[in-house]
Length: 338
Ligand SMILES: Nc1nc2c(ncn2[C@@H]2O[C@H](COP(=O)(O)OP(=O)(O)OP(=O)(O)O)[C@@H](O)[C@H]2O)c(=O)[nH]1
Ligand SMILES: [Mg+2]
Image (tube, rainbow, N blue to C red; front, side, top):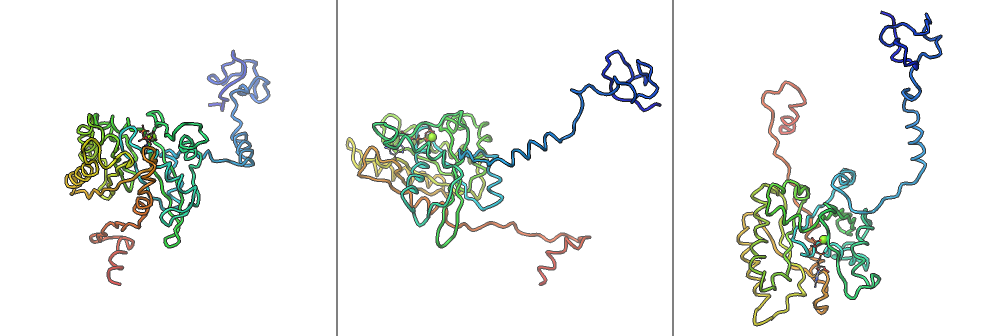
C-alpha cells in the first residue's frame, strides 16, 4: 500500500483515500497542491513556547483577594497551616470578626503574635473599609457576604517569638448557605471548609439572643446546626469545635427585667452539656462594639491564642506486615528490634 498524505489542498483530489494525485503526479511531493491546508497544519508547540517566554519576562502580581479552596494546596505544601471555619447564620458577625483581626494587626501585635505577611491583603482591606471613617458612613458596618461569593479563605502569617511563624487560614462564606444546608442536609457535603478545618467555630449572635421574638427559635436552630453537621459526618473526630458568642456589646446586663448575661450563661451551659461527647468549648467576643463603645473589642486575643496553640499531632499506629516478601515491608520489624 502506497504511503499517502492525510490531505491535499485541492478539494477535488482523493489522494487521501485512493493514493492517486488528481494532477497525475507520480511523486506526490512534486505536486504543488499536495499537503495540508495551512490552517490545518500543526506547527508544533513553538508558538506556545514563545508565549511562555514572554509571560515569564513579565512580573506576576498577586490579586491578594480571597483564596479559593483549590488555591490552598500551593501554600499548604510549603508551610504548616491552621484552618478555622466560621459557621453562623446571616449577620452573625463572621466577616466582622475576621476584619477585626486584620484591624488589630494594623495597630500592632495581638496576643504575642506579630503580623508578618498575608496573601489576602486586598480582601481584608475591602471588608474593613466600611468600618472606617474613610467610607463616609455614619457608623461602621460590614457588608453582607452573598451566596454568589462562595467559599473564600483569608490568610495571615503571624510570628511569635517563642513558637515561630504560624499560617492561619480562616474560611468565610454567606450565612444563608449554612442555613440552606441545615434545612436540606444533602447540601452539607458541599461545605468543603468543614473537612479542611482544624477548628470549626459556631457563631452565636447576641443580638438575636436578646430579641424576645426570635430568641427561642434561634437557640433551637443554633443547636440544630451543630447536630446536622455531626449527624451527617461533616466533621472529623479530630476537629476542634467551639461556640463563639459575638456582639457582646448588645448584651446590656439588664433589659426589661431580664438578666441577659445569666440567660447566655444558662444557654452556654446547656449547649456544652448537650455536646459533651464532642468536647465543645465556649468563648465570647466583641469585634465591633458600635452598640456600646464602653464594652470595647473583647476576646480576640484569647481567641487567637487558642486557635494557634500547638496541638498534639495524631500519628496512625503502625502494624507490621505478616510474612513480608520484600525487605522494605520488614522495615517496621527492624525498627522494633533496634
Ligand atoms: N454591635 C455590634 N455589631 C456587630 C458586631 N459584629 C458585627 N456586627 C454587625 O453585624 C452585622 C453583620 O455582621 P457580618 O460580619 O456581616 O455578619 P456575617 O456573619 O458575615 O453575615 P453574612 O455575611 O450575611 O453571612 C454588620 O452590620 C456588623 O457591623 C459587634 O461585635 N457588635
Ligand atoms: Mg459575611
